[in-house]
Image 1 (spheres, helix red, strand yellow):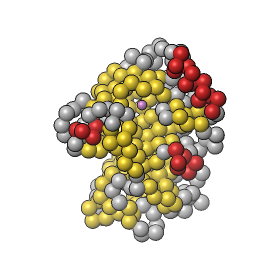
Image 2 (tube, rainbow, N blue to C red):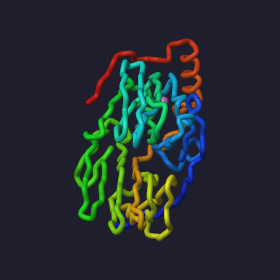
Image 3 (cartoon, rainbow, N blue to C red):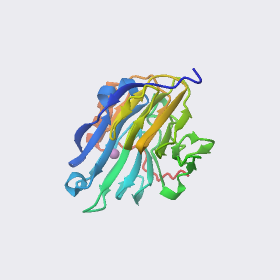
Image 4 (cartoon, rainbow, N blue to C red):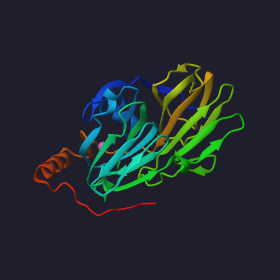
Length: 290
Ligand code: CO
């Protein structure tokens, strides 16, 4: 299968969703699609010029059993968590968070006008790691490597590797690959992804094709690829920008309650009871990973 171009198997237009304290966003996939996207749990695409859509933010809430990658395209979000991390991420910046056994954090927009745009991806954690200590790492835009192609292509390597260049997020247990690909009109893109890995793409802007079928993809759409050996893309007349994300499936049972994702309902009940009793957080020490 090494040379087989992966074809689009499913398309997700995204669903308008209210999240946090009333943030309007587009949810590409979540619980109903989780069996198809293992090890990915959820992808939120937030993007608006209207402060009423984002100002309420995501006040203090718990997580257990997952990792999140937040990638900002524009605007600024301040985060704070129970590890003592506090800071602001802006356009082009990245934030990786491992909830492990438990973290409580908040994510609040730092602007009252203008555009706020970005993505938050949830990665499942394997059963053996779900109760690991939480951790956090943020990466400024200039520290995300960019690979320039011969025909003006630009690939930012958020995680994994592209053309031998490694991305800065290498902490995630499931070893995802996460690329931000920009193709000018008339260029092309091809990238090997080992057979067996789950691969999806989300179109940020422009138009074009993401498989050999010639079927056009649209801005805002997320597509899941069938198995194969590589992903091939061709931009339309206005160019094409998309995220290309892959990971190795965990093939484990999933028990999901809001921000807590475990393997069994019993573990969910334990987490909820710990939240009520106030002993949800198992690790309070500050951990900094480079
Ligand atoms: Co959160």
